[in-house]
Amino acid sequence: MANDSSQWLQKDVKEIDPISRQLLESYSGLAPEEVIPHCLAIRDKAFALYPWPCIGQMRFIRLSLASYPSYANALERIRSNPDSRFLDVGCCFGQDIRKLFIDGAKPEQLVGLDLVPEFNTLSYDLFRDASKLSFEFHARNLHDDDADWSPLENRFDVLHLTSLLHIWNWEGQVKAAQRIASFTKPGAILIGSSLGSGVGGEFPNLEGDGTNFRQSEKTFEKFWKEVGEKTSTKWDVKTIFKAMDSTRMNMNQNWAEPTMGILLFEVTRVE
Ligand SMILES: C[S@@+](CC[C@H](N)C(=O)[O-])C[C@H]1O[C@@H](n2cnc3c(N)ncnc32)[C@H](O)[C@@H]1O
Image (cartoon, rainbow, N blue to C red; front, side, top):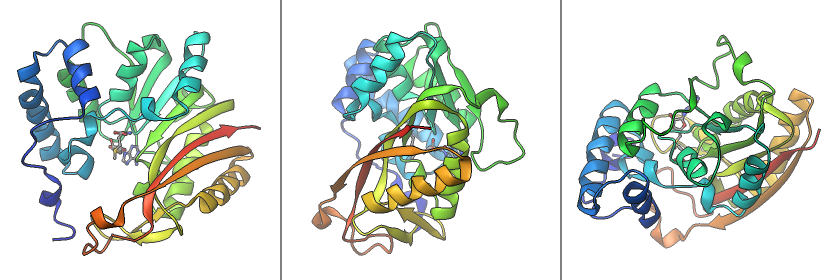
C-alpha cells in the first residue's frame, strides 16, 4: 500500500482552494458550478498519465509563489524592470505563472520548465487562456546532461521552485541545483519550499524506491555552500521551517518522520 499510486487519488473532492477557485472564475471565466467538474476532468487526464500525489490530491491548482513572504520582492523585481526574467522550475500546470501575469508581469518575462510537456498543454485547457497568454516553455529533465541548456543559461532574475528539490536524494538535489544555478544571473533570487525535516536527512520516498533528502535549515545552508563551490557561485540562504502537526501525519507509512515539515526559502546569488 505504501507505494500504491491509487492512494494519492482523492475521490471525494467537494471544494478546491478558494484562491484557485477565484482564479478559475475571474481569470478563466468558469461559472461557479463548473469549477469542480472542470478541475476533476483535467486532474483525471493528468493522473492517468502521471499518478503523482500533487496531481491526485489537487495540489496542481494551488498557488504557491504568491503565498510566500518573498512574493512582494519577486513581483517588484519583475514589474519594475521589463528586461527581468522569471523561470518557474517544475512549473507543472503553470498556475504561479498565471498569477504573475494577472499581477502585472508581461508574458515575455515568464518562462516555464517541466519534465512533462503534457502538463503545459493541459494547463491551457485548465485555465482556458490560450487566447490571452502564451509563455515560453521548455520540456526538460534537469538531470539531462545531453540536452541543449543554452537557451536558459545566465538568463533569469527570479526563479521559483516549489515541491521540487525534495524529489531527490542529496546527490540528485545537488545535481539539479547546479543546473538551476546555471540559469541565474548574479543577484538572482530563488524562492520556493520543499518537504523538510527538523533533523534533516535521507528518508524513504513517498512513492517508488530509494530516498529523498529532507532539508533542515542547517543542512540547506550546507547544501548551497556545496552547490556554490561546484558552480563557482555564492549564495545567501534565508529559510523558515514550519513543522507539521505529527498527529495529522500518517505515521504508519514508511516515509513518515516525526520532525517532518515544510522548508520555505529565499536563496540569493550574491556572486
Ligand atoms: C510536485 S510538482 C510541483 C509543481 C509546482 N511547482 C507546484 O508548486 O505546484 C513537481 C514538478 O516537477 C516536475 N519534475 C519532476 N522531475 C523533474 C525533472 N527531473 N526535471 C524537470 N522537472 C521535473 C514534475 O513534472 C512536476 O510538475
